[in-house]
Length: 331
Ligand code: KG4
Ligand code: ZN
Image (cartoon, rainbow, N blue to C red):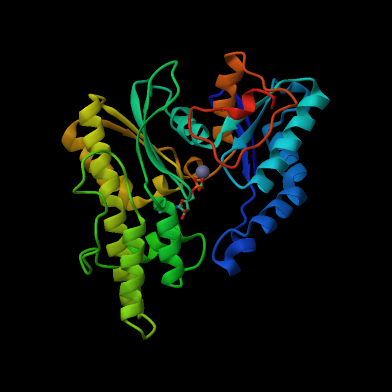
């Protein structure tokens, strides 16, 4: 659950994130029912704290942006209902934002010079996709994962290695002490044309490797598996992004979503950028993982275009980027 106050879609006055790692940790992944109940318990406080930290009275708000999808319906509905109620009470517009368009907006939020055209690589727990961003057009999909998301693979490998939840940061920490060349895991899709990704084969390869060792892994082994997995997971992201930039004749890349926090990915893309002569933009760590400032930034743009969705606004668990099924009331 997160709430933020953003001025002009650019300046973050406050950004609160109420994490649920402790709540879901014992289960090794998100339990939807626990997530939505926790949202109900916390939504008022998180919004109140965001407002007081920003020093902004509710009456000073110009609009409310809420995530309308995709995501877990129960959790989405809590935020959406609260946002609609707040907007109704204040007599201001409410606008629904696509979660991935929020992630994409996080890049420009901290890099005002980032102007289209650029490519956006969205890597999160639910998505792995490459978009071309042009002014005045919805993001154009160039490629996406055919099965698991990259973040999902990090989370599953963390679970296999007993590193806990959320997995990405834990795998990355363990990997720092390991040898990335220790194990030769498959680098999915590297040998294929196009810009699609695949992570289920890599995940299975890691599972088989862990199984093969039957006895509990030593710290050294955990570090080596983590490092070798991380290298295999990062390689296709770098290779596909470079190929797509060349193919599209674009020289700017924005990398967003939770996995954009990964150190190895940042280093490898930084080196590729220097070699190939493109510019790569990573949001600060706090804006990579889910946050409300990115939703406010994307929502500000929609409101500036005159899009307000009114009280018929609903949430949707699955929505392709560029589509806004919530924009029109169900008929
Ligand atoms: O964007 P996000 O916060 O939530 C979704 O929209 O899914 O992304 C969460 C994902 C999780 O799978 C988490 O393991 C991964 O991002 N992640 C990382 C790192 N930090 C978070 N993966 C690799 N390295 C990291 N440092
Ligand atoms: Zn996300």
